[in-house]
Amino acid sequence: MLSIIGILTIFIIVALLISGRITPIVGLVIVPIFGAFFAGFNFKEVGEFFNSGIESVISVVIMFIFAILFFGVMQDAGVFNPLINTMIKISRGNVIAVAMATVVIAAIAQLDGSGASTFLITIPALLPLYKRLKMNPYLLLLLVGISASIVNMVPWGGPLGRAAAVLGVDVTELWRPLIKIQIIGLLLLIAVAFILGLREKRVIAKKVASGVFDDKLDELGEVDEQKVESEGTSLLRPKMLWINVIIAVTVIGLLVWGKVPAGFIFMVGFSIALPLNYRSVNEQMDRIKAHAPNALLMAAIILAAGSFLGILNGTNMLDSIATDLVKVLPAIIVPYLHIIIGLFGVPFDLLLSTDAYYFALLPIVEQVVSGFGVPSVSIAYALIVGNIIGTFVSPFSPALWLALGLAGLEMGKHIRYSFVIMWGFSIVLFLITMAMGVITL
Picture 1 (cartoon, rainbow, N blue to C red):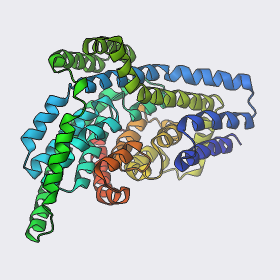
Picture 2 (picture 1 turned 180 degrees about the vertical axis):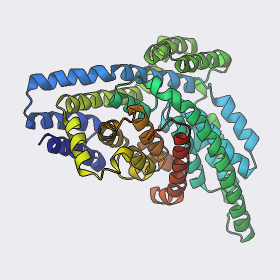
Picture 3 (picture 1 turned 120 degrees about the vertical axis):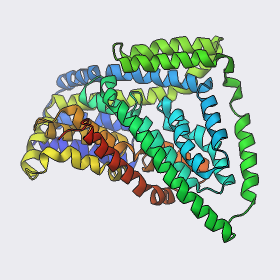
Picture 4 (picture 1 turned 135 degrees about the vertical axis):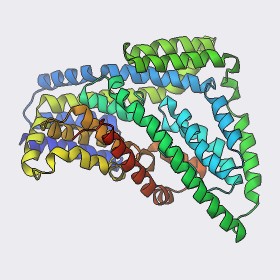
């Protein structure tokens, strides 16, 4: 009975998240409470489960809030702009170089962990260039999406924060083995961008020869580019560039070092960077208000997830589900469940939201597979690496809808253009991660 209640609780949450009828926060808080009551637990016991769950995620919440604020200030001050502008200038006029530069630019833009800001930076900056060179804008979306997904394995990105909350581990410890996977992934993507750029060049040559294109596209590119260059200049702090670079490198270096709590690092980094770049209290408050919605939303979701996991663990629903699932599934499949789900992670993105994937699916897989001696972190890596590349091909991604709006593109066409390439890339990166021993059987 406990397993049935647990499965129904998770199923209802997933169904509500997929339907879009409620926010993740409401679903993760309310539904498990009713599940606990049906299982025979009282208010006092549920309150104890809640406290236990919140305690397990509070360090992740602190890190998220200040990481988003810190990188938001870095973006506002223009820390990454010189590198982005240099890449645009170097690649101008060469289709293959533009495709490869897109990967690097998107990776830099994603350093704040926000997909929305990545698209806001890359799409307006690069779309005019793609149009002028008659490149397919869906290629732009594909490359930005995969690049941002790889970088999004950082501790202040959503997936690792969710996984860390589920496992109750330090998020920077979870991230450290993935650094080499991120580097390999970006190098592999640059190679893929070269191949796709070469293919695009041939397609353009054929279309030019057949007279398909309209020269008016070039004029549109010029107008858009001038508009982009005139936006957001009041927040830039070019005179503070090197000081900001030193602060950013120091913060990231301390994270990699791992001796200081991540939340404390970002809290100090933000407290130094904000007054250095924006001297008046009004300017500082404006910057906080600008980035607070993203920070608070992510923090609220993680806290709600803590409540959800605290209740499911406290009531022993997850243990019960895992025990019964082992009895139902074929014995040969169970020890490799994390591998199977990881390999199909991108298709899962079309069926489940990120919250449903990490807060509903991961806990069950972890409970089942860890019973066969597979480390919990390895199970998490399998689901993260297998799924994360598909983040920006999923209709459940709000940032993707923003990107489609900025570029004037359609979701259906984007999925048709990008899905197979993203899934293929995900599988290759998954196999590399296994070969390097990060994911174990």
